[in-house]
Image 1 (cartoon, one colour):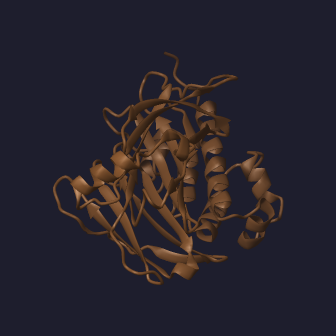
Image 2 (tube, rainbow, N blue to C red):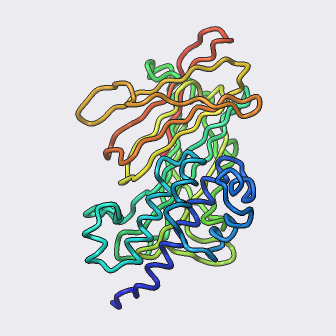
Image 3 (cartoon, rainbow, N blue to C red):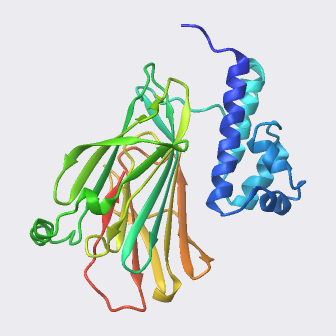
Length: 321
């Protein structure tokens, strides 16, 4: 196997930096000019960064990170660029240059896992963004996702009857997936009344685009479920090494929502998440945001909510990965 040249490593780091800026800018609904103005840069500067005409700088990374509230995600991409650009001996001497961590035995790492759940008063629509990196030695051609609903988590018999009578269907889910903007085919792995699993394939009608060793890509998928099969909790299970996990919940502000979360591991029962979700207003929507870095494998994070403008009802919920 040929050793990658330093140039290609630098080019990959520049590409990853540009992709990170684009992701956070689009997450906040800003165009390139608006972001540049908020950062105090020339209106065309962000465009030059995202098109890779300008190289990453520390000043840009820190200002973009602050304006976009990215939790050092953009700064880490700049550090990756610096580590790739400088000789290894110098990079390893400088503790500020964070080299991408190694996960022994892992063929796939989630660099950034970001989910947004939108509720319109009748339907829940999650949109998942994941930046995944192939840390193995072989091309990856598919990616597994899981959708599992449980309207009555404390009443398993009642749940079984409910989903036997009202099974979750692929048609109602309307699953759609893309990789770097390229539509992805998908195939069913598991089809049960309240649980679905599917392989997202790195291919479509126009060709194949496997994820090769060392490469990182953004995968996006979304679907919808009516609130008669969903409910008031949203759980994330960490099944792959993950560097950053983020959850956004968007509810109509008129429902007067309140949100809290719990964390459960293989060695501890449910306990409150370490930090509280933050609330922002987006028009008539209340958006709650929570994130963490390097969550332990097999940890489960459950976000729960209550609509204070509505009567209390039975806890319901959903899990995806």
